[in-house]
Image (tube, rainbow, N blue to C red; front, top):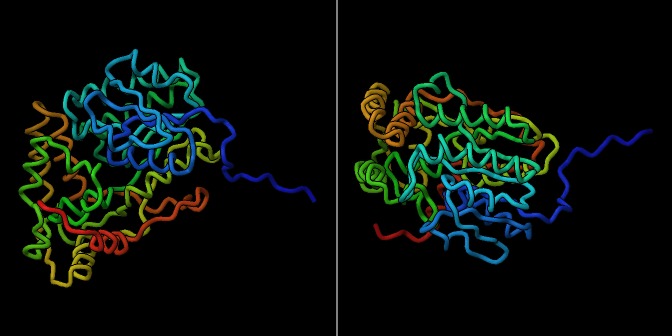
Length: 341
């Protein structure tokens, strides 16, 4: 009887490095760490003046450059066997902008990847919604997806659900930020900091979760660590070749469910205060002419208020990635030392 072919991903014999673009970001940082810990050659593309300490460790090759600088991008791609691209312009770092990352930067990166003969390009995108064209970030990600698909590069597009690391903090808690120096919510961007101050740690202090939408709005929240593991799994897996893969968390939770989990972990009642979707949609429209990044933040809140139609895709067993339960995520954060505000 003929033995069926083994379709599982095997450890790569190719010792050329995997290039991580967006390496000092919340997600890219975890991809770099996991690759290094597994003993796989990894190259981190970091911006001048960026938080290099987040990825400076044994086995990590740092290449300094900028997506707006074709020469540095070409240097980073040279000799790379694969690229994992997590960079986005939602919360711009100093000297960057939405346009330099989303509108121009990815075009430069795709061209450099083609010229360097990169084997696979793994791109972290966003879920597909009926409202993509209205939100600058989602519109930009769809554009990059189209360019990647047409580029001729072997690729995998990953579309993860909302990150519990971010959204569980944005509704009024500092708990998810514990032990995460790379969190996007720590970046010194004035707009984001103002938004953060408005909600702060309302859940811990007052038992109040300020949510987009109402307590029935639900999402398949996923942990950033699980997304990082999935991105790495797609680098070599044959089932990921030239595919777009949705990535959902293990449960679909309403904001009411999340508040109940906080109540369980903190040992105090937590009530939900909703914000109507139209508030965020109006703010997005007002901000769009002045700041695509700020408009995108409001757009994300709008989508979080109306719900994103992402269900369990059913292919995660193929890639052998375990997904973290929201209860376990919050418990693990609560066990870490509290940070000084």
